[in-house]
Length: 161
Image (cartoon, rainbow, N blue to C red; front, side):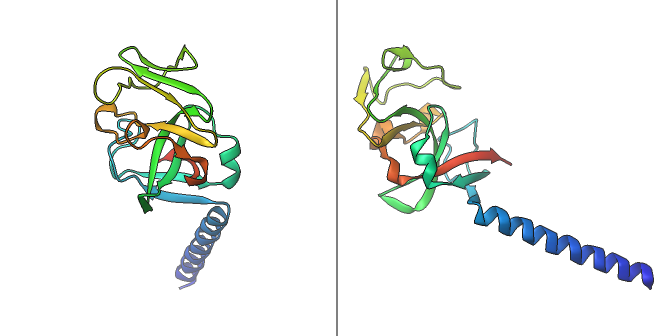
């Protein structure tokens, strides 16, 4: 009987510790998201769970190649994740040779192609980011919907399960 009581007390303590840790992480801005598209494959598979951090201060320190978590004005209830290719004010070129920013070729984890034929040249508006998916052939990214205002960037990907 004493052993059973110790086991129950230990399990209760573990449950309380788990919920306390989850609460601290939640208050700190960490969230679990399910990515709804295959646009970031193979980095993130469709419907894979990832951990992101909500952070308004991140908007002032976004870096190229980060995986940003954002919303689109057209679908504000849905969360997306894509790779940052260029920052506000930068000139971006996507062509058969890949992606370059300010004339310097960018080394992405996966090759990216322009949408349609030819070369795409873009000047990213201030206070915006140009986002691309790793799965070029299946990514509805900034090549189609344009640069994303920093106000729509919610945070960044911390890690995936």
